[in-house]
Image (tube, rainbow, N blue to C red):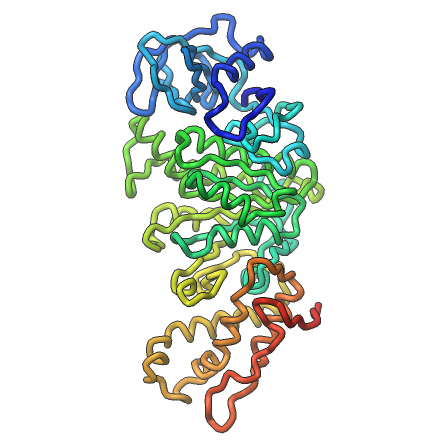
Length: 483
């Protein structure tokens, strides 16, 4: 990671790369090798080929031109290295010189952790919020692995403030969960709820490969007051593939720094699909053979390397990283290769269903299609029984929905279906929650119990009378919380 600029602007592109390059050379004269120059011999597509570079993968070099350009080493072949510009490289010519750093690619530089709170940075940890540069940085070893046998077990629930997840998909501190969703089903709103409502010390948000407009909207509208305890890494879709990958790794490295200080961190990565697509761009440019839907083998290899860095620390006092990774389902396809790969490496997944969103149920969590693999270790037997019963009744109603809608279902044909019809309004209301009202774990469990206390139908008629008035999405009526 390169040094910080003395001043920053509110715009991504206003900063002069010449100023950035001069700052690096002036402030870190020992950064470059004694024979610091290599030469560009070829540039095709996304890649720049250079001769004379002897540095590791992931290192940052500088294209010395009228407009200095940072490049990342992404591969090599014999005595030639393949580099990818982190910004546009217009004007590059054969023979253009490249300055080569001596610093290893495993060492990054980060500001002090508390100095990053409330800040928005790009993929190279440069502030883009117009609030000035960081005053000091310190070296950090990136991608430092943790022995899996040394990790502290996940044995404590984390309160996310979202009723449906707290009660039906309970998540533990240090768990890694996927958020599977198509477009337009409330993914960003749910991420904002998690960031604001979670009982955690720090929230790290990685906005990777999303539209630039959505970055500002998410920070202002969804994150809101939660920004004060958050760090946002923003790498929009127009950033290069290498910079988007660096942004995902940077967000994880920042979360690791807080974890090493003993803090409990919530890491929100939006999205893991864009990370895989960025690696696919690099792999195809390097000549990797495409496999499923054009994804290269390195695309799938990059996912567990990123995800496994989250989780608990090496001791009970080392803090934890609870991570939510969004995964985009193109055309709501569960057979998408990234969806399938993510499901295999994560500790659970929450599915947002378009059908529920179309009914106005937000957050549109598909209870039947979602799972938390660690839930049974974290909850009481009473909550487990209630959660299983809720899922059975919900799934039963969904299977009989068409018959119920056309009036073809006859009451008494099936006792489970009768109960599902009777409790369906209460279950729908339980799943709904205002995006401005957090619901803690204790209240979530109490509300789940109340779903099954709907009055029995009288005289053979299915009825929804007696729905617990304490379950209210606007929380205008609040029942006492039973612990």
